[in-house]
Image (cartoon, rainbow, N blue to C red; front, top):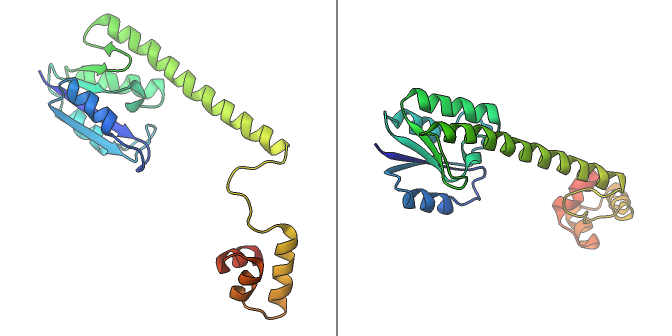
Length: 182
C-alpha cells in the first residue's frame, strides 16, 4: 500500500507549497502536481499520471476535496475510477477516507456542499457585478484619460501632432494616446 499525493493550483502565480507539505506529512510516497490548471479542466496531466500509478491498496490523497474536481459529478466519477482500480481516496482537510462505507457516503455529501458553495459564490459575484454596473461602476483599472482629454487628443492628432508629443502634453504614454485614438 502506498500513499499517492495529488496537488493542484489554478494559476501559475499560486503556490503549491502548503499542499505539498501536507501531503508529505500524510506520508505520500510520490506526489503529482498540476500548476495553472483549473479543476474543471478535462485534461489534468499530473492527475492522469497519479491515477495511472495507483495499484490495489494504494490511497490517492489530496489536501482538499476541491483540488480533485469542481463539481460533484466529476469528483464522484473520479472516486469511482479510483475504487475500480482497487484503491482508496483521502482528503486531508475534510477528513474523508473512502476505504470504508461511511467515508464514501460522507464524500458524496461534502462534494455536494462544495459544489453548492462554488455555485453560490458565482451567483453572488454575478449579482455584485450587476449591482455595480447599475450604479455606473465598472471593474478594472481607472481610465488615465477622461472624455475631454480623449477629445483633445483626437483634435491634436487631426492637426498632425505625433502621438508621442500628444502623450507628453497630456501626461500619458504614447500607447495610452493610441488607445484613445482608435
